[in-house]
Image (cartoon, rainbow, N blue to C red):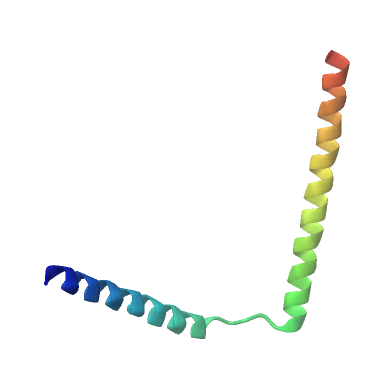
Length: 69
């Protein structure tokens, strides 16, 4: 009997979690298309710049290792 009570409590907390999550999602202010586009451009530009930085750093370290070896 205790197992069934724990199982019922577990499902109750699971349903409560999803109900609370749905309520929180209703409070979210979703970005407009213009905001989403500008945020996406910023993210892609940042990723590109960080990639180029690490690529140049990798080339520099590889050159130093070749000189040492």
